[in-house]
Amino acid sequence: MSKIGKLPVELPENVTVNIVDSEVKISGPKGDLTFMVRPEVKVEMQGSTIKVTRKSETKFAKSLHGLTRAIVANMVKGVTDGHRKELELVGVGYRASKQEENLILNVGFSHPVIIKGTKDIQIETKDNKIIVSGLDKALVGETAATIRRIRPPEPYKGKGIKYVDEVIRRKAGKALKGAQAAA
Image 1 (cartoon, rainbow, N blue to C red):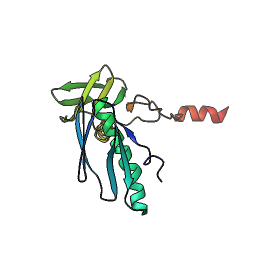
Image 2: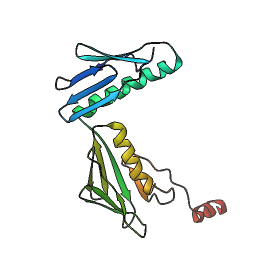
Image 3: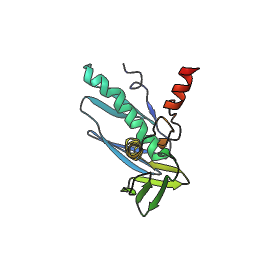
Image 4: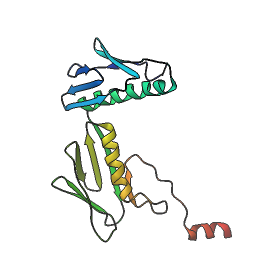
């Protein structure tokens, strides 16, 4: 039995779940999300919890068991609290601003980089921080990764776009390497 898959998903009082055939719809104070469950896995309500079980013992069904439970748990957290990722701009002259739904980044290129916003994701900018938030954890993470990919942090000075909790491993430059070898 999957360690994660066998755990039930607790439902807060303000969350409603509707399971029809292979579609799970979870509604809460922040909005609602839907998920199509694979036929190898079964999702059912048991009181105020959601239980995920697998229909067979194949390797594929076992892998889907924990995945489905984790997705359902993330959906419940998304419709109650929401998900968020914070990014930080490190570098002289690096700026982020918002224009209507679009995010405009000035990160050392000869032109500003424009990222189109969506209705499912909210993007805020504060000083040198970008906050990406929304209901769907996968979509929030994907949007944050897309923003980071524009200018990933480099290992010598650490300039670039990084997650707030990310630690950048720094390298010694040529001048420092030569000084250490001579000593």
